[in-house]
Length: 575
Image 1 (cartoon, rainbow, N blue to C red):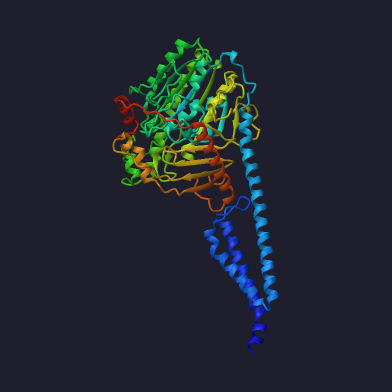
Image 2: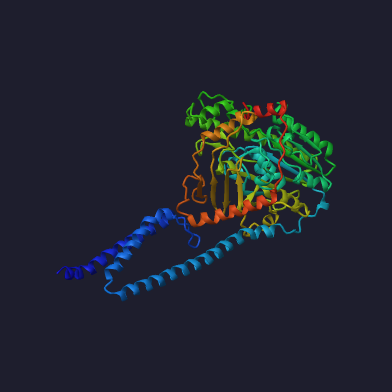
């Protein structure tokens, strides 16, 4: 009787088990779309810890089903034979998957490296016997999206816009780092931060073993001069390598006086071939543009902050001791924009003098920045150096040719701070030095429609947080928590160091689609696991390249002096 009931119930039990197996397979399919795996399947990462229970249940149900069907020793042997064949099939599938994935990944990385190989081959260039000069302008803390030529609604930059209209404008230019020294060191050497290791937080100076743009051009017969705002651009950090004159005196007379010094120098050296680097902190906090720029963009403000936003006010806001009111934030941004407008007006003086001296048609002008600034996009106001979000990395790049060739060209493909050095060298017709990690953008300037795959690796000071921006996607890797520093380290009291501790919400990885989410608010790390894996592999490849180029050298330390400390305090880096 019991045997008869069992025989009748067995088909029903098998159908129930089949239904449960289908259900758990569907559950696995859901896990696939939510990205909860850590298993490689043609580039898809699967987390076995997330699917372990469903797999155990499926396997158990499958075994129960076959045990129900056992009615003789022959059926048991048949089961184990089929199980062996099935296991062999799975192992074969895994092998095919592995080989296929390796091919897929290597093909993807080959595309990434193809443009670098092409762009670093010598191009025909514009021969150096034309005697062109070079001016490189770096406006510290300048976001690209606050320039009118980049689509900003406010008219902050008429002179820069005019420069852009006569030259080449890059709409997706990415900084190597969100801080001054580390970013300029990459700009000057065409090396990633992990290679040159220069950074202000640990007082690490740029090592003499790396060739800089100024050193290269000096060897080619240029006289080389720099006018900087000091601070992290102080010669103590050795960015002066290759310059005949490196003026880093911040005498408190402001940007107009700095421009006066530049104009005086140009008048005295207009008949020589020169490389001039000009850097200003005018846009950097504290935000205190002179009249009428202090009321140019938000004159109706009636709040209590005043017309000078010091680091102390920003610290209180970022420590949540002072609430960030919407009208206060608009006021802060208006003052920042006022600083840009004031800087633009002073650059207009420089451009006018170049024309008056007959240098406008003899000089290659490159205008860029080192990093941007955050205005509460991710919870912090008036700060940089703490994250690798777009507001800190997306900066302007404008290149104006002496004869205004390539006038009005707009390039939407990605470029990087490390590409400026080889681009200038290539335009002048010189062979690029080795080793460098950037590529020349000159081929892209000549053919803006050409396809290129140029990964932008950016690093925060300390190198514990990195991002890779590629093909409209961006991966953040690492932890934002700062390393501990000793009391003997003078940077212990640094304004932005303390913010690192307050602002540590970023998880170990975050992945964004910048085409649909330019503000980086929707983390796709769990739903784009295949792409994340490709990005992880590329970061690993770049890290291996960085380690190879860096070698085992021990970088030197900058010497602290009273003038440097004074400059850093004035910029809010020291308190």
